[in-house]
Structure formats: structure tokens, C-alpha cells
Amino acid sequence: MKEKNTNIHESGEDYLEKILMLQEMHTIVRSVDLAEEFNFSRAAISKAVKILKSNGYIEVGEKGELILTEAGKAKAEETLKKHRTITDFFILLGIDKTIAEKDACRIEHIIHPETFKKIKELYNKLNDDKK
Image (cartoon, rainbow, N blue to C red; front, side):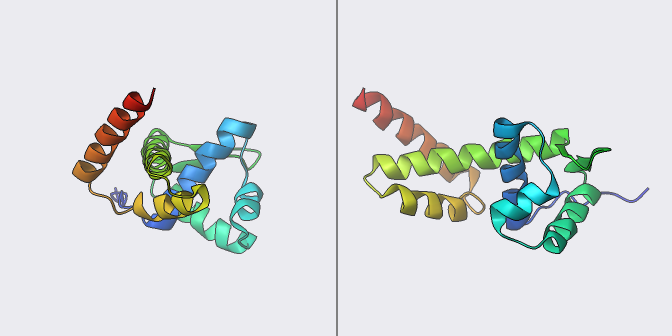
């Protein structure tokens, strides 16, 4: 049996994160929803879906809905947590929300776990002190 590639590129993390976010709002997510969100062609989304599916991150339901597997959901939640924490941390530092969001979206993919842990600790401390 061929072993699945569990490495995921930045764009794959973005897709998983977006699927999770859309599921929180709409429950059912289809490829067309991703195409609209990212402003990409359906062909590009179809290719990404195929890769995510072959790597075990998503399944496609009978009606074409995208379903996160356990591995996909875990990766999506991890990425989204990083995104939200880093964004909120930057906003707490006084950075404009639009800039904070944009920077967090880049950083969430490359940040070392130890660095993220320390940012999260400092954010929590600063946020608690603010209350």
C-alpha cells in the first residue's frame, strides 16, 4: 500500500483552514465555495481538492461536499488557531487589523512551534493585563 504524503504546502493549509471556516458558517462546503472565496478558477480548486483528497485531508461526499478527515480537521484547526492568535496579538500591539490579518496569514505557515507558543503566552498575559 502506498504511504500517503502527510506534508502539506502553504496553499493546502489555506484550503483546509478556509473549509473549516466555511463549515463554521454554512455547514456544507463545496468546491465552488472555495473558488468564490479565493477567486480562483474551478479547475484550480479541483486540482487542489484532488491533492488534499489523495493525501487524506478531505473526502468528497455524494453531493460534492468537502468533508475534512480527522487529519484535515486537525491541520485546519491548528492553522486557524495560529492565524487568529497571531492576528489578535498584532492588533493588541496596535497594528491595523487589515495588516495584522495579512501578516498572520503568511506567518502561520512558517512559524516554529516554540515561537508560536511564546507569542501565545505573551498575548494571553497582555490580554489578561488589559482586562
